[in-house]
Image (cartoon, rainbow, N blue to C red; front, side, top):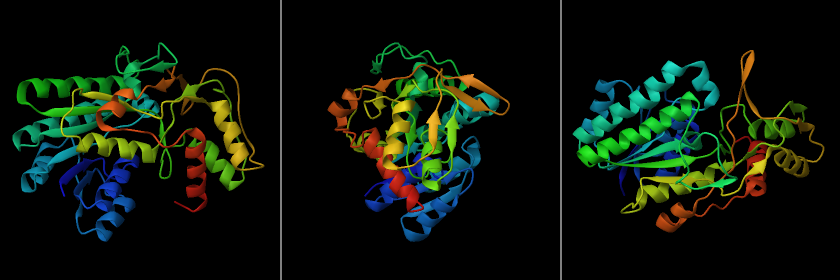
Length: 317
């Protein structure tokens, strides 16, 4: 049994990781700017789960939590997530994503934590230059979210060089599944189909993205956490495939007969209040490096993932 600190523990990926760690018997300290109902319920059900309100940018509160009960490792999920949020609040994005990571790295250094697994993003690549890319692809992010995540990756390397802190960056891509809080595809299609209401996305039919099911991401994160030594500090964590939004609509229609959902032609855009932002070109993440080093093997292709997501949505999860 180990003790793991999870930042952003009330979030989509963070709460799934807390649940998985608790289920296998690890002791977990979960922190977030607010303790959501899911994290609170986990803390009530599992004696080994502790939940704390902690703003990751605040040195005193984070340092006191770690000083009182130093973890063996950290899963760093706390962030302002996604392109739309970062466009609407770029200063807050850098305060939390970069400033919060700097605080965390400093606290880890001072209190003897040696490994941090950081949830990075495919947004660090910017526009994909091929349909399938590996970790050697140039990192040229164009939006504040991707820029902040790339800066965290570089900052982690600095702490590794200067202080021996091991920061492992996992570049995920459009993670989906039960508990996804943001109204983006494929959640918007699945929710409408299950609820029996019409939904039409006006653009983006040909947009191909490596949608990755939450269970695969959790398995990959735990695999990286547990692996004794890493020859690389960055790994793609995806499904290895890229379905277009038109293909996703067709699959959901097949799985939910009569679903009144559709997607229009044209480039995909991120919706903002009163405006929209063009998305970077996407594709599939090649996950061979993660497979070879720590045995990451995604179980869900897009059809299996959507089926599991629809079943969970029907069950109210």
